[in-house]
Image 1 (tube, one colour):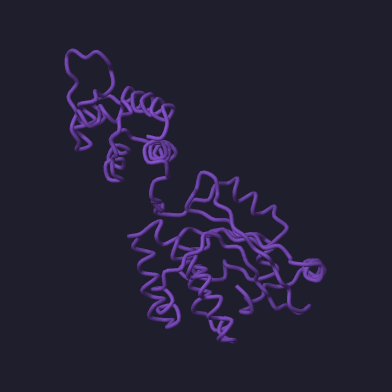
Image 2 (tube, one colour):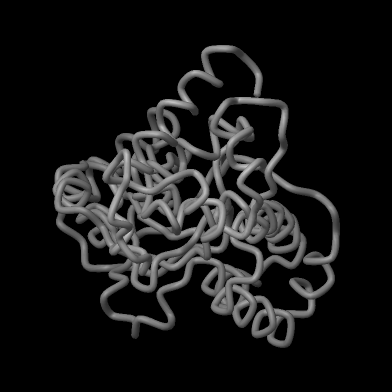
Length: 285
């Protein structure tokens, strides 16, 4: 624990979580006499696989250091919601818990409305780089992800395997190095995810450069950079950055803004002419 305030918050939080769960909810018999209607410390400890003393010390804020496994079992026993699980890990370990990708990527209606209202190209991707949402401007200026089968809507697969990104080998390798350094960090956040493991195996077989660079140690923590797209009005350069969606840490929003006055003018002309969907350009990623 870092501060007395954290310890006090943890004590109240665990106590309230115990109090709201009845023994029957977790498969325990209801004793004829109980001082409280919720779970006792001994109940939680037994269900989580720790000693009663250990859980008591944790609830009291003493100097114990539970592992990720113990906190995950407590989260399950106490029926914690996703925000509550985050809160527990932040109080105890001063960091968020490991990401657990949902079985299907849920995009809230509010986020979809925000995407629809953006006047710039934007993509919503999961931690494993699956494209799960996009703005109308992306469709009009770049490409329509809906024209791909769901399996192929993966930005990492697109960047690493599609021929248009290999026209200049030097540019491709430099871009691949940056992309893989970011993907490597994302992979570490959900290590053991079968879908991400399968994607890495596939790309290692399909792309020798990916196989070589994947084993390098470099990591990047942000997706800032430039992306140049070739259109019928000339090359158009976008500057892009990414943002984690609040309440959905497994989702990142990538927004592309025209870089410089020349690109701004071309972008305005391109939108005004309502162009058909175009292909991605390999120039810069």
